[in-house]
Length: 161
Image (cartoon, rainbow, N blue to C red; front, side, top):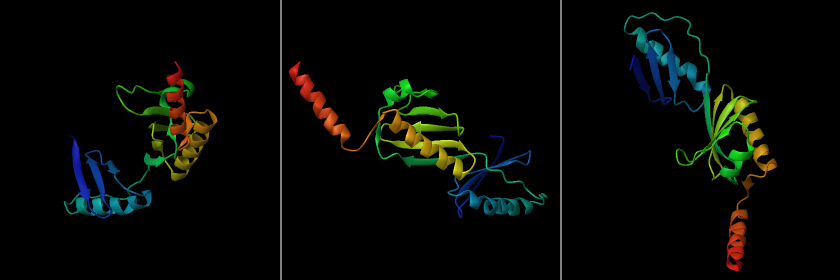
C-alpha cells in the first residue's frame, strides 16, 4: 500500500496519508468531526519535522444506512426501477443508481438500505425521502404483516390446484 495508515480513538477514525500530501479520513460518525481529526494527524506529522499549512477539508462521500420499515420485492424492483441491478446469486441486495440526487443505494428485501455518494446530509435526506416515496408509488413495498396475509393466500390457491 503506497501510504501511511493511521488510526485514532477519539473521535474514532482511520486516516490514509499519501506522499502527495492528500489524506483520506474514514469511519467518522459525523462530518463535523473531520477538522479535529485532521488537526490531530497534522500534529503527529509535524512531530516528524514535516511542515503542513492550511489544509483543505472536502467531504467527498457520505455513507448512510437506514430502514424503509417495509419489505421490498427486489425481483419486481429490478424490472420496474430504471438504473437498477439485481443479481441475487452474486449479492443479496439491489443496486439502484438514483439520478437526482446523484446517489447509489443498496436495497435489501428487509427494507434495510445503504446510501452512498452524497456530499451533504441534506442530499442523503432528500435521496432517502425520494426512494421511500418511489418504492411505495411503484408498488414494490409490502408493509409489515402484509407479507403474511399474501403468503397465506398463496397457500390457499395452491390447495385448490
